[in-house]
Amino acid sequence: MKFPWKNLNALLLFLFFLSCCIFIGFSVNRVYRFSVAEPAEENPSSLHVLVGAEDSEPEFMHRFFLGVDSVCSRNDAVAEFLQPPVGTEFCTLDEWCSYAEFVCADILILYSENSAYKVRPLYDVHGKFIPVIIAGQSDPLGAQVCRITNDVKGEAETAVREMIAGNYRNPAVFRGKSSCAAEYDRLISVAEKEFARLSGASAEFESRGLSYTVIDDEVRQLLPNLVRNDGTDIVLCYSADEINVVAQIIVDLNLTDKVSVMGFYANAKTEEFLYKGIVYCVVGVEPQEMGRNAVEEFFTWRKTGSARREIPAAVKIIRGKRQ
Image (tube, rainbow, N blue to C red; front, side, top):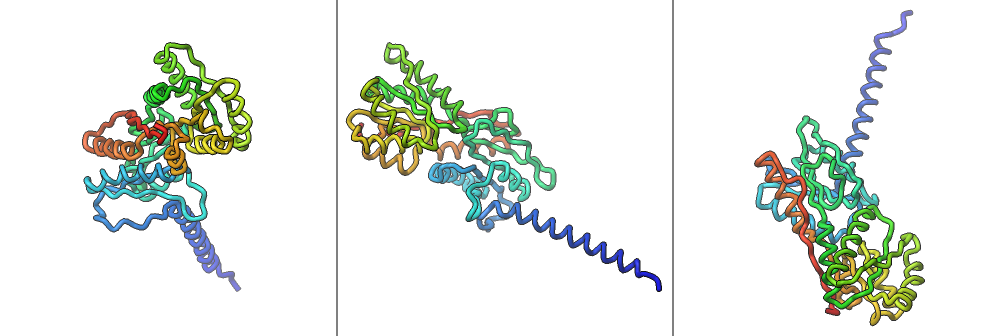
């Protein structure tokens, strides 16, 4: 009796086909899980604008997206804000890039807080180039067509002018570990020079590093000594979280009449401290304007084939009630 080789070949072919289907299904599921947005019902011919970030402040990104969407609504474009699926802490910027390629987006706008992030050239499944515009911080040598950057010099100079206007003369700096460390170092360097120029005295801000894991304990130990021994009357912090920790400790230690806080980013909790006068002011960027600038530059690029390589974001000041 002959062995049915034809049946065996057919079985092997079927098993190979089944394996391919399972692999493709897994890959598609992996990509589709990135987005929880509902499918757009607008005109399918509209431009598809994706907006993604990596573990950023929700309120900031909400305002940033509003800026993008306001421009898209006037230009036959559909803006989609990418969010991690439920149960996922965050998705990386590289994952959003892969998703943009899979869905054949017309543009990807990323908000990055990592000055070392370097975006690669993106192409959809048909080989069409997908322009990327990055707001915030990123590697300037990446493949983005434009960067909407923080105006570090402008922020530092504005902060010092506000400080001097409030009659603060002995600032201290609390530095937490973050991906923004290089930018913060530059910001403080500019601030020291501007403070010396405007005050007529040499200035080197008292600087203390924080571990982030025990930031609360460290500040509680450092701050009273700085106020008592060095006359520190204002503390500069970079992130909203650092501002909020320092502000709460000032309240807890009953130092509200001796020292205040100034920072460069804010969230909803920071706004509470601003209202109470614990935080003197916050200097930063206007997220809606940053979002508008990003997508407007895309339409310029689409129309002319070129875009400005770098655009500094406008500086915004939020003053506390104490003023």
